[in-house]
Structures are given as structure tokens and as C-alpha cells.
Image (tube, helix red, strand yellow):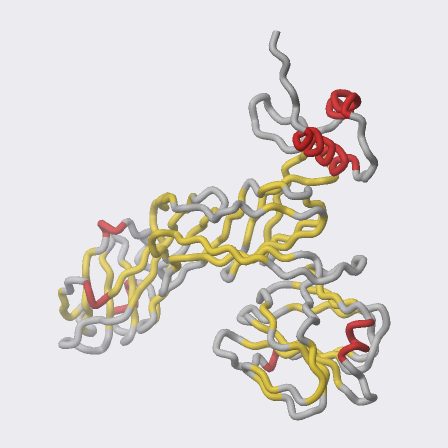
Length: 378
């Protein structure tokens, strides 16, 4: 019988896996491998979702099983998706400065200690904590046009924790501290400031730079879902450029001139004539069909699949775009992101530019028996 040797690197990899599962750094005798592995459980799959998919018990260096992004109805559509994987602490103080701050989207005339604009997920809940308070902690939020969202301003005085929610259209924020008593950047850093997702304070962790993944959908969809780990998607909305359609027109119901075009072949969800279709338009207000004939600048889908537009003109055909829900969603595939994102041990945060994220991952803290033949991670 041939002798088969096991490389030292393989033995060490097995030992690392056992230590990781047991939460120990002790040396392990290879003679004990079999017994140790026999009592190890398989990692349980869990699913989290929300504006931020917030994981508190991620297994160390284990790939995600799913990362699905929900894409709301859109006139412009989506051809790619950016997904962020961040750690626990979302506050980067590496570029903190002292003095009047002038940066993208804002200028502060007061003397402050500030951090340059940082990316933030809009429409999410957070908590700020620190080891001891200083007076005058502020936030300023900005939209994609670098315009300050004044209703999103946040001020906190003499506190060690502060919960807050970001405006839905926020894409960046600037943390700053009022320098009224000679406060320096070193003073701020020494107080272990941390911002984390959710509303419950936990122990401090240093900031680690997030990783961004970009998935190319290989097409433009106007609403649906996309699992960027498995490269599968569902399209639930369709979009049309009105200027490309072949229009007919006439006086409708003795009221006003309306343009109309049969779009039934594009699979629209057909509403009753007394209901507004599920969708949007950039130039016209969606309205029920039996009101479009006497209301200018409106658009409607009739129950027979004909699209109507009242643009107040009998000579200029409709222009712009319309997005509407499909009666039957369609599926598609695309190239998944590579490498597949892996959870770090403990807290992980996943989010996308648009809407909600649902992540299926493997937990570090529980065990589960999987069906025979299924891929497992210890």
C-alpha cells in the first residue's frame, strides 16, 4: 500500500480552522485532529436584511451565500450596483484636521476640528459613542449634488452616546467638533469615537476601510432584485422612451385630445380603469384612465394595455420616459462579483447605493446540521 504524506501547510491549515472554531490560540496535536473535528458543528446559515444588512456574529473568512439588492422603480434604470462591505466602526478619523474647514459641499467659517466628507448610507439608523464627552459634536449631511440637507443636521452636547438617522437622500456626511476650548484632533482621537449601525452601543473597535464591489448587470433594468453573489436577478418593472413609440391620437370621450399606443406586448400590469398604474413618468402625472381625457399633462394605462398621454397638444407627440410594473416578472443572469465577499469574525455591515440589502451568511456562534452533500464551513 502506498504511503500518502500530508503537507505541513495542510496540517497547519487544519489547526487554524480548529482554533478559529474553538476560539483558541493554543497549539493542537495532529493526533487530536480527528476527535476535535468530530465534535465540531457546521456553521448555521442566517439571513439579515434592511437598509444596512447588519451582522453581529459573522464567521471568520467565510463567503456569503447570498447578497440580494432590492432596486425600486426607476426612470433611469440600473446597469450596475455598488455594494459596500464595512466593519463595525464606520468613523474614519485618519484625515481629521484643525481649523476652518473648506471641503466638497460645504464651508465652515467657525473654528472646528473636522473630518473630510465621508460616505454614508442614507435612510439608516446609527449610534455614535465615545469614552468621554466634549462639547459641540456636529454632523452635516449632503446629497449627491453636494447640497447640504439642512433638515438632517445633528448636534450633540456633552454626551458619550447619540443615536441618529440619516436622511434618505444622504450620500456623504462631515463629522466635526467645535473648537471652543483649544480642542485638537489628537484630543478627539483619544476619546475613541465610534459610529456603528443600529441603535445599541457596543465595545469600541478601530476603524477599518470598507471594501466596495461593483456588479455589472449586463443590461438596464428599471426595478427588481439582483443577487450579486450568485449573479441572478428578477426584473419587475419595465421602462419606455415615449419618443420611440408609434402614436395615434384623437378626442377622447368628447373631452381633450389624447395620444395613445398599444403596449400590451410589453407585459404591463393592467390596472382597472378606475385605478392608477404602478409606475412613474418624468413629464406627466400618472392618473386613472377614466380621468386622463380631461386632465392635461397626465399619463394612464388602460385595462386593455393601451398607454394614453394627455400632453395638452394635438400636434406634438409625447416625450420623456415612463416606468411601469410588469404583470409577470422576468429573470436574468449576470456575472457575479469576484471574489465573493467573506464575512470577518463578528460585526459586518453590507449595503448598496439603492434601497435594501438581504444577506445570507454563516454564523460563528451557532451550529447546524446540513443535508448530506451540501457545502459546509467549519
